Image (tube, rainbow, N blue to C red; front, side):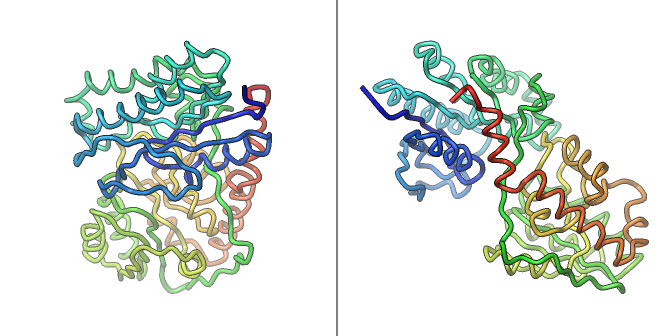
Length: 374
């Protein structure tokens, strides 16, 4: 018989530091003993890895090499099936399952049916397969994709609380929009709002992974339009399979390119972004997302965005004046802005970050949403 309340947190792809650390801290503050489970296979490197989260328990799963493959689906099923088999031996008081993979929802719902006293919380940080970036492939694979999504959708009602990472996901899933909790982040306490913007040209930033969901064509097209109006330098902080394509497209568009590679030093990132007028937040239109980690990182460094992400981000940009939603006149609008205009926008960004994404604000949102459940 346990005297201490126990909670487990599940993330097949080891996204503990993405969102789960906030819930973990909240549960611990309530006196819960928590254990974090993840798989032993890294989705990005496609290799076995060792998780660095203290006390983490890793479930052995089959490897896979292609993201769209039967092996990947079976690997996800391995994790869901095996982790709930282990939990069956000593059911916890709370299970927090991060989706995707959608198989977790399927096995979690079955576990909840056998143990109705266990509180079940779903954290949805991505809509898969809706985020698959190819519209033509989505149409071709409509039937299997609907089955894949159904593993999630048909089992959401089993949870005591479902927490999507943005309001767009709430709308897609038929959930109250107040269930959404944004990504949490922390600004370096030594970071100052001071900016050094030039008036005789434009400095733009691309931050983050350069992968198949990034809209390289849109970034290059807007850069070309801007370069016809003012000298443009694009500072690229990141790397990925589409990096060579992006760098060449920016050069072809007439921009000077400053590629820094992957940068972990936040003070170095801030030094670069304090010289930038805007950050690119442009993804392919077929991707189902309402808020990107990239945009939160830009906001953390006071940088307004050039945005094409719909719903949450587009509404935030319009309402709070923290950037521009990209349209036909965007280049002309950017070129017409003065340094003072940009500095005012940076102040808006700083305020919006403090009100929506700062860690204490997000912690309070979790406390309010989980009150009476845990």
